[in-house]
Length: 112
Length: 112
Image 1 (spheres, rainbow over the protein chains, first blue to last red):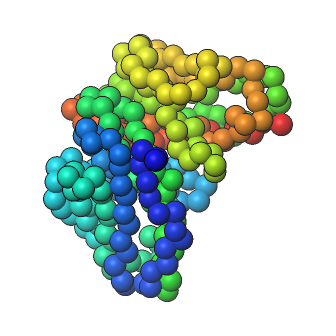
Image 2: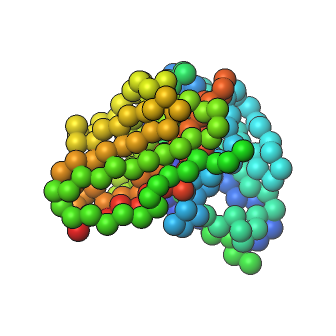
């Protein structure tokens, strides 16, 4: 079992719809959770961090964390073609450490 | 604030050579982590430096090494290059009370 798992996609969503990206992790003691966006040929760009159970909203993005079920999700509302990218889920397993474990990423395509 | 910078952006080397990559963190960031990204393995953690000390290490052979200077700039070195070392090498920095990491643009290494 991989430490952090994501559906590799591709996930295709019409413009204006809600895109839902999911991630599960295996280490129950994981403390910090992150979503990064990576355009082809570019480096990962931070979208959001989440540390506590529940929802965290930032503009069109909402991250959801459920530690009991060991999953993290990212919702993108009013999806735009510019949201087409690979979305990486990352988990920091050790509090205070800077050692992220990444999922393989979900390729998202927003269709105009 | 200026972002994370990495030099060089592109490198072409041949098997058996060695290479040194550089990373300058965001001002005030003292933690520098290095990652390798390949299509097959995704993003994998190499090591992290904080206050000139290696604090965490991933599962890579000893050919991969790094160091950090007093101004928090970091270098990583790969000796005796192999074809499989061809990858995008990313550094990510963090600082203050947060463990959020911000990535540089990466160095694309091609080993022939």
